[in-house]
Structure formats: structure tokens, C-alpha cells
Image 1 (cartoon, rainbow, N blue to C red):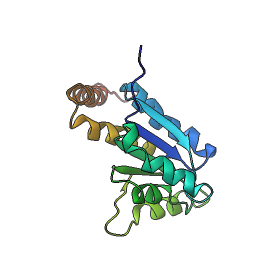
Image 2: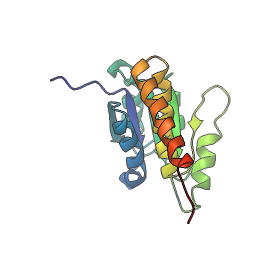
Image 3: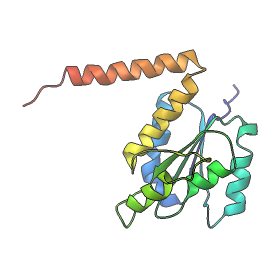
Length: 162
């Protein structure tokens, strides 16, 4: 049985980002979206990062999710090396992730990075946004996303307090 080619690349600047970004990977897995996860730093391994991102489209990747903390701007570096959609997930940091958020969201005009929330919520939502992007040309994925939204609604509708 052939393994499906990854459609989403999840890249993070450090292994310390994995406990947060695992939520991204788990969400992609829940929807059956083939993906790959990799550690590569915009500042410590710039050539490796550039090569990995530059070759992504040729490997079948359709969306890149990049996570980094502090002023490390992995998402911006990724966006500079591809025309694929890049979704940035700011990581919690010494400044509670505010520095990460600002370095990710403040892209100059011309090289966009879609920026999500700080931390695990952002990691999960980055996966869901990547799925929504892929679902524009994948009916079964669009159906799965609609089912997921309906499940969320049903949980809220059936919720009771105390």
C-alpha cells in the first residue's frame, strides 16, 4: 500500500515547539491529511530552511504551517521562498508570545503570512485553515470539515450548566 504524499508541511524552529504544534499534527491526522513535521530554524539553519521550503511545492506540499517563538521569523522566511500559502503560528515565549505574534503578523506588504493565535489554539486553527484551503479543491475534505463544524455546533447546543 502506497503512503500518500504529504500535502501540508509543518515546520517549527525548535523541538521545544513540538508540545504546542502537536495539536496541529493531531488535527491534520483527524482529517486524514497527509503531512510532514520538521524542525528547521530561520536563523540557525537558514540554508536548510530555504532548501526545504523551496522544494516543498515539487514534493506535493500545498500549504505550509510555520511556528516560531520570540523574534524568530520562520513564517516570513518561509513565505519569502515560496508562493504556497504560509500560515504562521506564534509560540509562547518569554513575553507571553506577544513578541512572537508581532514578528509573525507584521509582514511587509507583498509577502503575506496568515497569522493565527498564539499557542495551541493557533496550532489547531492553523491545521483547520490548511484543511479549508485544501478543501477548496477536495470534496471529501470539504464534507469532513462541514461534519466537524456540525459536531462543534451539536456540542454547544447540547451543553448544560450545572
